[in-house]
Image (cartoon, rainbow, N blue to C red; front, side, top):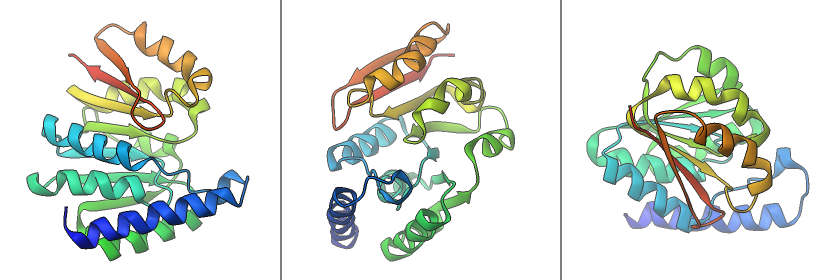
Length: 195
C-alpha cells in the first residue's frame, strides 16, 4: 500500500473514532470497520481474485477504500451504496483524495432499490455493513446477485451477534451456502455461495 493511501486511512480511523465518541446519533456516526477488518477484507478480495465488489453501507468511505485498494491490481471495481447524502459526500471527497475514485461507483440510493436494478450474478464479493435488521429481508436479493463461488462478508457478527442471529440461522438453513464466523475486528460472518 502506498504511503498516500496509508496516511489517509490512518486519518479516517482517527476521525471516525473521535467523531463517534462524541455522538450517539447513528446518522452522524461513521461506524467504520477496524483496520484489521480492512486488511482482512483486502486479503479475501485478493485471494478470491474478485473483480466485481458490492458494499452496502459506505459511510465516509473508509471500508470502500480498502476494497478499492484490493481490486486495483486486477482492474476490478467497487459499487458502494449509501442512503445518507451527508456521508456520501464525505466518502466522495475521500475517494478523490485517495486517487481511487475511478475504481468506485457511489450509489446514493436505498439498498432495496439498488438490489432491484441489479442483474443475476452481478457480484463476486459483497460486504454488508448497514442496517442489520434488513439483512433477512435482503437475503433473496443477495443470493440472486452473487456469483457461484462468490463471498458475502457481514460485519459485526461478534459485536452484535444477537442482532444477526436470525440472519445467520436463515443463511445456514439455505442449501448451497457455507458459513464461518471470523473474530477479526468486530467479527466477520463469511458466506460462500457454493453453486
